[in-house]
Length: 170
Image (cartoon, rainbow, N blue to C red; front, side, top):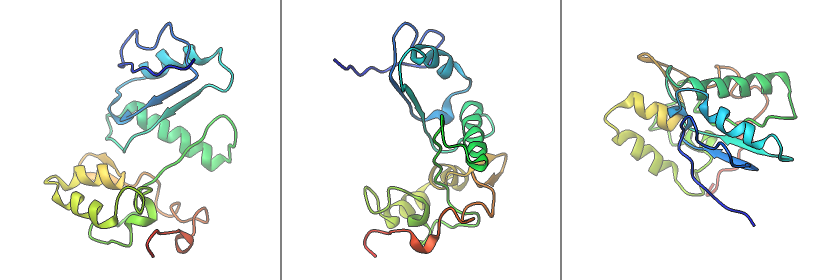
């Protein structure tokens, strides 16, 4: 009885259908909150409805996704354990593409669908290093500088012990 559909983001997208689950990919490209305005009302009558929003980091113009990230970070720091689930994978501040030890510590695909070498090589092949940092390290592009998606010091502040990370193949 289930069905799968694809909706574009627009003024009338998602309206009229009842949704149990919505996935929003490449959310850094959404420029406003039409995604929520079209999906959330269609979910309100469904028990346990979920809206999943994900993306690599964007830039200062990624208003929708940046707001979602800030909301998630605030929930994590406040210890919220209901109503929101937030995951973030970002390279630590100062990381370099050619450091093969850094990739498995933040990138969930390493050892499953990618290798650290493959990711390194692809990142190094990009002609725009700043865009590669956004796409591969998940660093928000802010003007000509970058800020880590999580502030320095919070990356390994006891939530994750980097020495306990299981790295396939090691």
